[in-house]
Image 1 (spheres, one colour):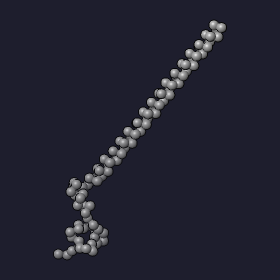
Image 2: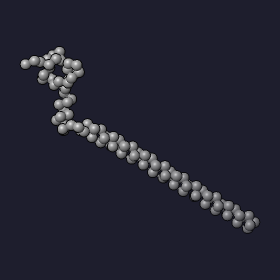
Image 3: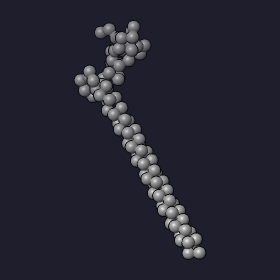
Image 4: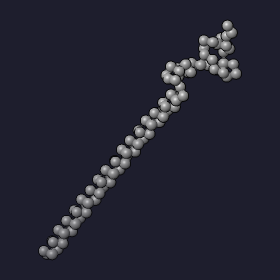
Length: 98
């Protein structure tokens, strides 16, 4: 009887130990998944920020400054697609001769 009781206790201890190991393993696994998920989210945010920076650099590249950019946005296509400012054009989009 003592032998059966001792084997039962050993078995219970063994099962308890396995259960604790499984729980710790799954907790570590979940922690790793969380780390990967946060890393991916951080990488996506940095990629978006870099895209915005690159876009703003492309806009400002080759131009004198923000005033020049505003002037270029106001231009409308004139005769043969050549851009003219609004002040030099009549209502049909032609340049006024002075």
